[in-house]
Length: 316
Image (cartoon, rainbow, N blue to C red; front, side, top):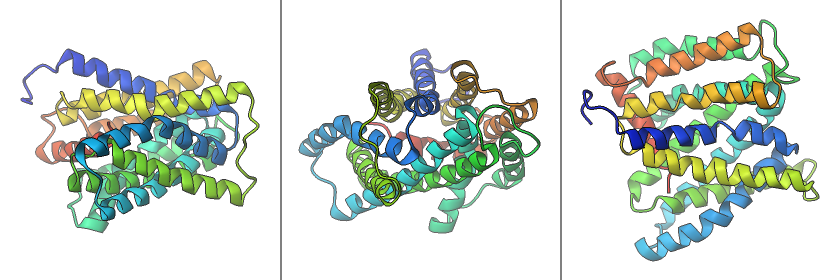
């Protein structure tokens, strides 16, 4: 897409709708009111109710995945499961808004993982931005005083950061799978969800077990979390990003962390301090500088393009 061409309004609306749906995930985790292992396990199981038949239909149409590719998809699910477990704990510790903001560390972690594993070059701009991003996460986590976002804001910020690193690992593997078998879009995601569910279930069983006798309201919120957070949001984001320049899509996706903070305050009554809000703003501004619209430099656009390809692998 030419930088001077106005973005397609329908694509913009689809992507914004997907980002808005995704911003509710932290709130839904909090409303479900269950432990991280149970919430993470059930969101995988419930999402597979939709993803499994969709993947089977795709395999009938395009053929099955090669065995090695299927194995990498399952392995990527272990990183996704770790992300779910860490991030859910971060939501309960630091609040939905802060947890979603610090998850943006994946913008830094993904190219670093690609550098370590595949030797891909890390843009110099990313190296310069790293201290700002980490400083914003520290402020958002309440190192200078926390609000009412959660009982353990510092621990939540640390776990949210680790969740972002795990999520970047998932994106890296999933991107590799998508390049190996571009005709399969749903099947790798379904297999990754299986891997994530197995890890979350194992962690739950090794601890206090997986909660089954949940209140009806908890089941309702978990169903909404699974369908909205893992199916609907990424369908909308993928369809929208396909019609937009990479930098434009990356910038529009910043609606997600901003709305997450606002929803945490409005729906859950979270009250982050001015310092925490400043940290959130610093994180969002740094990410905006890294994935800004075209015209900010060829390297920056290349970074944004790689991230969009990674996001697109999540889309049926």
